[in-house]
Image: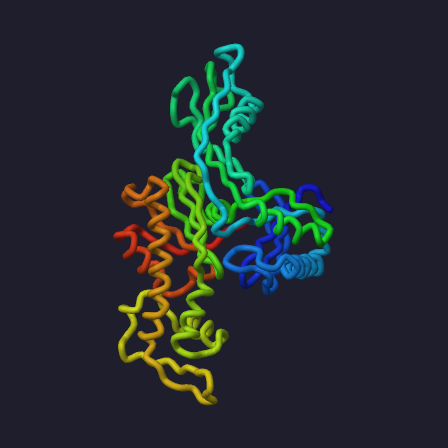
Length: 355
């Protein structure tokens, strides 16, 4: 296995993707990827470890068949409502005083910030520096090379339930691989859809998945808040299935082909054909009724997103844009809905980019 390649696993409710990429002068180039239907996951969490392991195996087989690569380790995305963020702070003296900060000082101060108490059933996933300070000077993003007598860091510590993290690790190790690193999905989504300039200006990234919605708030170039809502686009399909009395597959078709999260924009005269349970022929239905069902659930999700943004301390910032991503973000009218829920803040849809 080439040592410069990174192989990533994204294990979601509806699908799982295994992707291999290599570094280039301009970023990362995707060497190959393979997506399979997912089993064993519910609302972003491992519900059946054996089925999750089988899903990982299928994704790996597909990647190997396409690329000939046989990875030995994986970078694994972590999501779900068990993920939490904790603000932390670290200090280290610079000895002798006045010398230039070195890489070892940065590692030491970040490690010092990780010395926080967390419940015994939780583990640290990542420690992400938000801001460095030298001798009290705030807003230092690149401390290496600067001189001073004390280095300080403000860090976002991301933690998860030990049982969930261990289930993910066992699903990977059951296939003879080791977990190289775990990365919170909200961070990965933000790095994938935001440019460095956009992260510096600040943005709220909302990754609408099938089983959960990941929220990541970026400011001054760093992730400052992360959360997960155990509601996703799969629940929208379930609502349509129950209220329109159709199969889940038919409800998914209606959502994708005819749905909108902004019902008022739909003409009252529009009609769609629906195959209801117990019927053999399509029956007409007002499209606006379908879209009202979709909007109701998506508005609930958008409301939870707003609550998290306000909890982050950045809710009062005017003009903080909303960037929607994930398969659920492709629902028509979702940008208008989020703009309404966020009092006119600019909303857009973006997909991860690679070289």
